[in-house]
Image (cartoon, rainbow, N blue to C red; front, side):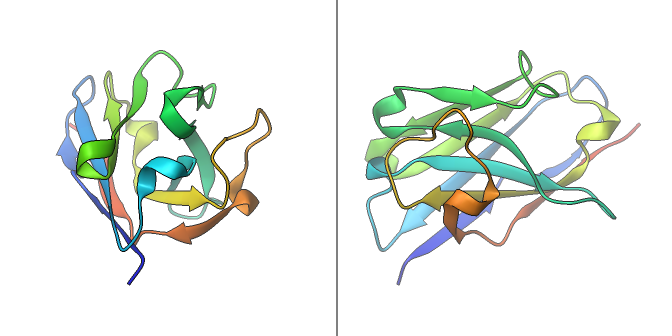
Length: 126
């Protein structure tokens, strides 16, 4: 069964850090572009970051650039999102997803991604 499972969310104070994990089962994650998305209450789901096959390219939204880092561990069939200097506006449900191709593309967006995890909640609050 093809599945993505996110973990690592939680409650953190402003300025703190979290590392989200996206673990795949039923297929080899390394062959595909993987994106992280987030959805805050009352808002549309937005793209946060994307990583291509063999980490050839990584992309970040302007709102997280310089604070978040995406990476992949092919041996563990997992992609990570390291989030530093967290802000209250980062509060959202975070989802990982795979595209049916190995590259993100400079104009990567939600429509390119077909397999989704169930999400993990991140709350940034004092």
